[in-house]
Length: 107
Image (cartoon, rainbow, N blue to C red):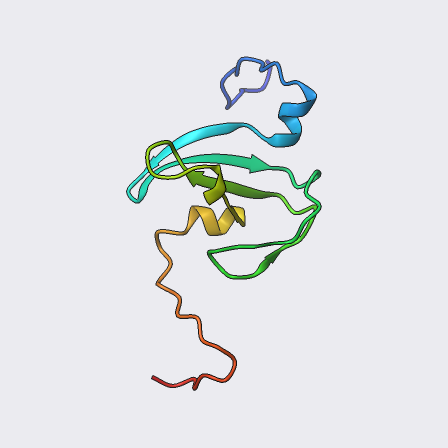
């Protein structure tokens, strides 16, 4: 008896080398708007980015997500690089108050 397979047979995608480097884009409709999302493996990134979710650095070589508003109210200039977990949990995060170094910690 052969073991049971718990996954569906997925159709094979023909990916060229350029597409595998850039990542595959898809449009995601969320409560805060419609976004074009691209998952990157991090192999081709050579810059350090700042995640808008946690305000930490995304170093070169780290897999992450690039998202920008879809057509109608944004363009590719509005791209933001997110940690994958920060992108997934962005609706659960409380607003973050950024203070300068000299600002008091209370109130």
